[in-house]
Structures are given as structure tokens and as C-alpha cells.
Amino acid sequence: MGYGWGMGFGWLIMIIFWGLVILGIAYIVKSLAGGVKKEEKDTTPVEILKKRYAKGEITKDEFEKMKDDLKKE
Image 1 (cartoon, helix red, strand yellow):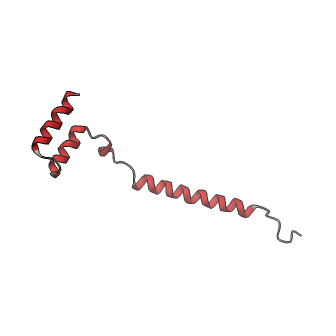
Image 2 (cartoon, rainbow, N blue to C red):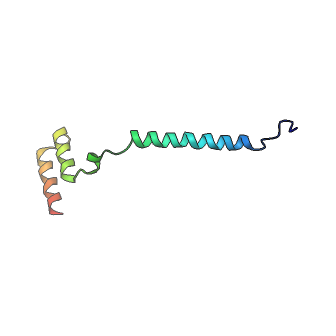
Image 3 (cartoon, one colour):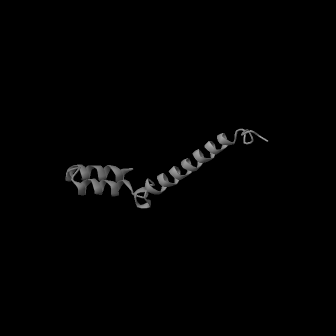
């Protein structure tokens, strides 16, 4: 009769197992919720510039100058 010592380090294996399960779930949630959208990933510098101009972050003169600089590259 084992007197309660039959599992040995089974408790440690269970802690590791559940830790891996929790890490796996956290990874899946993070990749689904925080992933970069395809349309954001495929934007060009000119499109970003247009969005900044549309939001009012830059003036028309700044927009034109930056656009010309980008076209030179």
C-alpha cells in the first residue's frame, strides 16, 4: 500500500501541464485580438500620408512636400 506516495512528482507535472494550457490559451487570444489587420499591413507610405492629411495632422503644404519626397524615392 502506497501510503499516499504513489504519484511521486505527479503534482509537478500537473502544474506544468496547466501552465502550458494557460499559456496556449493566452497566445491564441492575443493572436486573434491583437493581430495586425491585413489592410493595415499592406498600406503604402502615400496612403498613410493621405490618412494623416485627412485627419488634419498635417497641412496641405506639408502633405504636398512629403508626397513629392516619397515619389522621388
